[in-house]
Structures are given as structure tokens and as C-alpha cells.
Length: 285
Image (cartoon, rainbow, N blue to C red):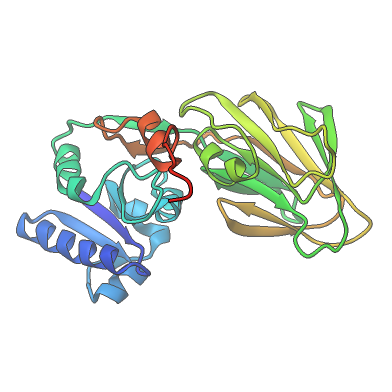
């Protein structure tokens, strides 16, 4: 088995963990490759470009926070991914640092289970045919630097849903419901729920609320504005600047992400811990 390893090189602890992991794998003659930037930072010669690692690696290990795991999963294709949390919230990263070795041994022994996570696919027409972008968390269309309030027109399966005057629109998976969508007032959706949530960003209409739809829906979004360019972001990465009336089609992707599950981890306990649900606060002390 060969592991593909991605390190958040901005975190010193992640670098230390990467070096320790390389030493542990070397001692056991287990194959591995670090993606190029991680290898350069850690001065490791076993490396490959992240775009080609899925050709050589049987599984991936992400050392960082949820952002690092999102980046890794994009290139892992359908290969299993072990997410080790060296960040803060860690909704996606299943394992603590002290659980990393046990998780790897579990994967090598074949004694593991998978959290299969749905992805979104955003499509935009292009001169040489449609361009497709995938996202595990969310597809976001924002007003960017546009100085006025644009209108985002949304249709479901060809039927008009609404036209929102807002700063943007978030289309999120159940996985992404605890990311940007939650900060914009969207609901938290339990993992593996077969739904998407459409959440307006700072809507300029009092009656606008997030809408939860079945994940078999075809969602079309365009921006009604006289001019301007509007960022299309997938998992926080700019993919294209949209023109007015240019249509973005969002659907369930045929490719899902396979995250190695931590059977000791309870999703709702994480919500209570990370979001401080039920925590008593002693004010004025």
C-alpha cells in the first residue's frame, strides 16, 4: 500500500506530525509520497504533484484542518482519505493527532469503514463545451466587488424558485452545512442526508429563508444585473468570474468522497463541543 500525504505547511505542528509519519512509515517499509509543496517544506524526496498522486497512491492522509482535508479530497478522487485534525473546529477531520497511527494501521489491516460524502458539481457553458467543477462543501456565487445589490435568480428542475436580492447564494451539501452556510444562517444538516441547502448571503428581503431541497434536484442560478463580474467559488476556491445572466447549473456529482470513519467519534457530540451547545456561561465574572 502507498499513502499520499498532504501537510498544511502553515502549521508547525502539522510539519512535525508529517516528519514523524514519514519516519514511522520508513521503519515499516510502507510506501508513501508527499505532495510537492509539503515535500519541499519538510525536505523529503519521496514526492509527486498533487494532480497525479491518485495514480500512484492507494489512500491519502491529510494533516491539517478541514481546509486541508477539502484540498486533499479534491485530488484523492474515490480513494480513502484519513483526516487528522491539526486545526481548530475539525468537523470533517475524523481523527485526533494521537489517533493517527491507529487509523493508518486500521486502514492497512482492512478493518475500517467509510463515510461516503456527496459532492456537488457546478457546470458553466464555455467556448469549447461546458466546464465542470466539484465541491464537497459548497458552491457559492457572490456579488464580489459589484457596488450595488444584484438579484440571484434560482430555478429547480426548470421551475422558478425565486429571485433573491442578496450579497450571494450558497448551495451546500449536508457536509458543508456546518461551513459557510451555517455562518450565513443556514440549518445544520446531519451527514449523509440526501439533501442540499440553498442559503442566501445577507438577503435584502425580510421574508427570505434558507431552503432545503432533495439532492436529485437540478439547480440553476444566474445573476440579474446590468454589468459586473460575480465570483463562482467551489469549496472556497475561485473557479470563474460570471457575467450577468450567465447560468450556473448545480447537481449531485457522480463522484463522492470516501472519508475513513472514526468509530469513536460522535457527530452530535462534536456539535455540542465545537459549538458550545448547552454550555452554561457565567456572565459578569
